[in-house]
Image: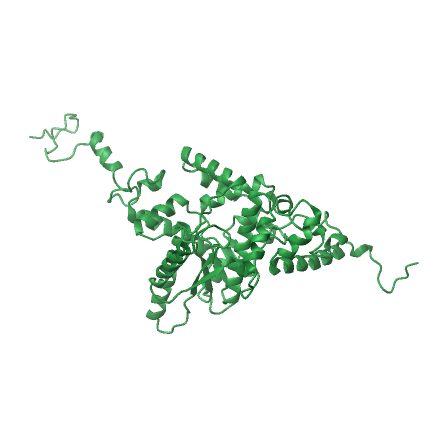
Length: 458
């Protein structure tokens, strides 16, 4: 019975079924262990098998992990306005986990756009097109034709099994950068690579030639975007390697979401995903990956790759830290998608472009580019008129960046003529175009010192 006394401190007035004001007992060890065995996000499913990943991602279940990776991809695409309904995008596909995930995610975007198009009444927004490009480098790597043919057949199967709209697979030998009907393209490519003695320079030159091939495929087939599967891990290695090679000035141009210095702008929607995450996603979703060529890096690139792997084993956030640190560098003006007034582009996308695009004061302007690697050059002071007359002269290296001068261009001046004769026409044209731009820039710099035609020289 209750005493109904307001001064009573014995709580005798409370019924036995009422909850006490005392704090609940601390959770038992068993309850804490059970909580750790649940997904960090949904608190329902079991997390991914330990050892697959480290960090918070390892505490996600398969569904939440998949949603997290796709969320990074979608945020990059939407915030940077990488793809609009009127676009025709080309996905660079090597068969590895990064490019395989990029293809799958781009297909997911297109599939959703197609369903929205079919469900809409006015059919006002078109569905962006998707193509796939594979660069056949069997002319460079010693690999059997049967292995390459089998890999290409598997790629055709992967692309054809994707839901409509149909996606075309472009298989292009890398020697086609000389000419699609050139019979001596393979021989010229072999001689060009053999003319480079440095192992790192040879790898870098092959990378530049691969980009030329992708640009050629995109340009010839009407694509206006080139999607690469470059991820955090690969970009982190590039940051350190470029620093070692003396490419610090042009480094910020290579690590942004958008790179529009090329004829066909290049975008990196997987920039915020690590290789470990992409590998695990391929395993979880059963995405078939291929490795037709043994392209293990060597030289400086190999040393940097091994070094970053050691750092990543010690601390799972090292790759992300490297990328975030390099991301503080000032980007260039071409690291953005140009704003458009096309009525086929939704207003939301146009507003997003204006919001996220770089302002002039937040970017670096560059009018000079290396004819070999297309890296932006810092200044014009080291060049002179005599070095700009001909791409075939021994002074061609004066128009190149310091990294190409040191690692790719022959040291012997007598070998320069043969080296220039082996370069693809795109590189030669770029050098000639650069020469004209350089002369125009030089004339602008000394315009105040020139006499006009009406002035008397005396």
